[in-house]
Length: 375
Image (cartoon, rainbow, N blue to C red; front, side, top):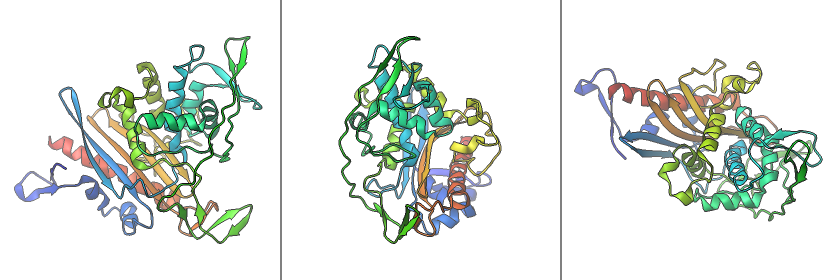
């Protein structure tokens, strides 16, 4: 890794600090929102990936830093899986001549009529579970996993829907509007049963709640979705910097679809028509602003997908300051479950988890800002 020279107050020789690992530098902060977690990083199951982005003429260079990142150490990815599902829905639409993202449809047996574009927008603006699940019905679990495998993003396994955690192996048909008067159903897709995961930390806690009863055993995530930190980071890179990858490692979407996707990823709830009192700007933006109710400044763009469930908070983001020419990739996860009981909805999201991720994002941004001011 390259050495970074940071001027603390002035550029006198005695004020220059050599930083070999900027991520560790930020995580060593005395900010209480960071330090209280970093006193026991194993307890909080912290994992972080940080990519510095350096542009030289027409090329982009990545400098990567990690902390406790381990694909064999399981964490529940929650809604972060919605990003690849949204991407792959666009990819599949390209393979069907009669469909595009503005095609209207509904799920057989449901009354909600929507479009693929509306569902993708809702996935990022307010992390809508129902929207995600409709796209999963369109794709099927096996197709999702196969497409991701061919892109060589890393280990991944999508096994179930979100919200109700339905593990039904057969998808429900979509009823598609080919025009105002013609409706056609898709075929149900049969998927393979998930094989139990064998990973470190797949059993968590000391008890869990089921049917209003406390079960005094560890909670197993063996049949849940699996989307480790590095894989999330690689999926995001392929959307933000597709030119950095070989053709067969890129997602097969058009430039226009990619722009639509990026626009959806950075959108704020109020920009999608949602009540800002119910859904403030930082509702689905944990880094930098997660612990604030204030509007996010217009010069800061955050292209991301968060997830939170079972006490685990994760954010995977490309952050860009368009005024100050700052950009970086940051992906991190933390578990906050002080009582060790799962499914009881007693998690320290607001007290510990989100403040940590917000402070981490600020720390990285401020580090990048200091380097930019010195350059």
